Image (spheres, rainbow over the protein chains, first blue to last red):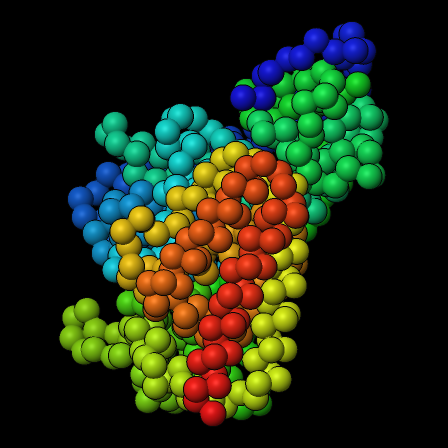
Length: 231
Length: 249
């Protein structure tokens, strides 16, 4: 994942580069910790037989409100595993935007062939790995129509994955949080595909793929699927 | 991490449909917004709409206004309403591809308007394809491939849905949220008409070949090839549509 270490041209990573990697790690660790609180708060309701969407909403709303109040997030919530709820095949208990509106598409019907989120990265990866994942940068045309970094963790009840809890960070927000550290390190933050999240070089836009010959040294951001490239 | 940025209110493909409206002509605007969403496929066939009162609350209109809009959508055959425990209003997109409804929509357009809409669609989607070839990695292309209908699938509904989702995903691969929203708007405007020719298995086969060339070009980071594949597909669809249009006028 993000731990690929390429023998660099610049030798040992600079303190600024290490600090940058730590800042990125610490931001997402904060998000993941907050998501774990939401997950733990949902275990009871998710243990019920034949859970209905309305009961899920009632339990998830206050937890998500606290999540969104504590961090500079665009949105967040719980996304049910297909078939987990008794009355909805696919369901997103997701709140977003300034008004923290409940996503209108929560009334998807199983027969209506809605966008099947079970194959998208932010759902599939944490479910398959059992671990936290950061997806993006990507244009989220399913939920927000915004350019996003989405953090998701699996929710397991009785050995069965019943969904994921997640939180959206706008690239705009990430940029304002991290640009100083990235510039100080003269670095580029990339994801596991070596897609640029944020670069000190103003000519390198977010979203571009960094070709193998330009990668230099990669400093992993903890166990996140993100790295800081220097040199 | 000293700076903070307040998350702002963004547009949403589907959420925007239910955002509050201004005062003027509310029922008509509710109706128009939902009709566009149904035509574009943003609201899916069989999907249950919120109840009159939920809809009214979401849109910030009176319940009677929401009811009026639903009555009109029902009259257009875009929704059906059932009563009872699982009662409610359900999207019936099937009627969209009713040849009579399509004929009426097409016949209401001039040849110039049809070409005008087609030109905008073609330029934006070919641009998306070129950018996607630069910016997509292998998992992105795998996701696109997974959207395509199976080899033996000739169901027009599947084809139209798959092609719409393919084009939206292609737009998202431009890594530009504004570009993606543009394409969502174009799809609402013109998508259902543009996919009318996909009822014909011969045109499905042509489209499958274009999709194949597109995916091959994307995997090879071949911008010109990706652009050309989308251009051929859309030009082909627009030709078919123009011929259909001529037969109605």
